[in-house]
Length: 239
Image (tube, rainbow, N blue to C red; front, top):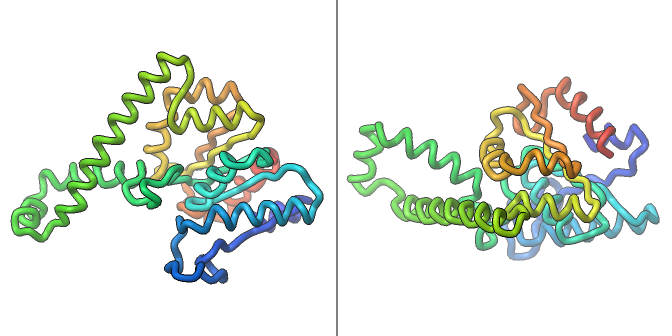
């Protein structure tokens, strides 16, 4: 995608964030952590370098999966971001600095535990002490917290007449002039949690300029060349 955008006249910076690809991890940090504490500072430095190089005032961001998290958080923090395109996002905000027990993980774990309820081997594993009881307890606590937060956000939204949570974040970006687009592969793990958070506000978001595109068939990284070409043409229109 970056190469295709560059061929169409866009100035593009594609980054391997610290610990990813060919970039070494920050001292003391483990490699291959896509949500490392350093990634947002990496993005800020890359943004600053590209703007200075091109003598531009604003920039557009594009990120896949954890890169979508970086693009989203950078857009929230920096008004120079004029557009953010999030591809198959799974995490928008970290819990205690970690992507563990994100809305996507909660949704997937809930499906797994529902299947386990009718599985004799799962019950045997639980009563034998082989199950990860600590994780189950943390999952249940996070699930309750997530449900309570959703109820609170809906109540506050009704009282204030303004959306809360992720929808509120998107509304805030759109209101200040940052274009926000999300592209999800059909049946991607992050699709259901995303819709659960946004669906009540989608009509209002769409009127404000929010774009949501669902692509049937591709894998998480959009490796299918035909789908990638379709996505590229759509991105050219967005940018």
